[in-house]
Image 1 (spheres, rainbow, N blue to C red):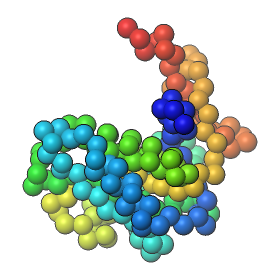
Image 2: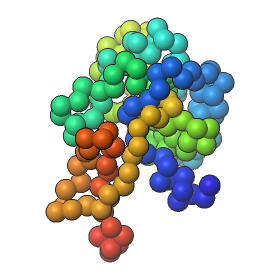
Image 3: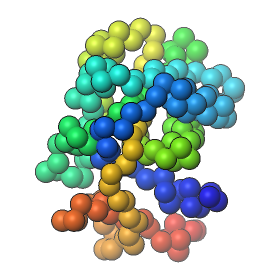
Image 4: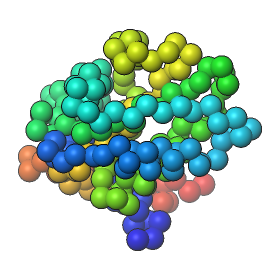
Length: 188
């Protein structure tokens, strides 16, 4: 798979096969990919918590917001929930500003997920205080994002932006549509 094919396959999936288990070694492989990405000043301030047990996944799930543009959708049904998460945190004792380290690591981990037949969604809408408390995360670690992972059960397609409307939407047949601006529109 070349990089463009990888990018086209690496979408934000929000519905998964909840019966598909993701194992600790797969999550460690993804964290290792994130760990190896470039880091501003080579500070490496990102820390990760892997979550893959049903008990911990049940703690994480209700702390997440799922799709801001889909107002009538509260998130995946129980049978479509992620089966693992990677919580990406900033070690506040190492850095105040992490620049774009988290974005680089998250995208790389998503590519790694695609490579092993998984999909994911980077979630920034998080009840961080409650999640930190319930998972007993030390206050020195500031939650930045949660990467929800699983075996995707939805189809995501890219559409052309119409009337400057960039909001993603879901059709009646369950297909998730994501408008993208044309190359002519983004090239200056």
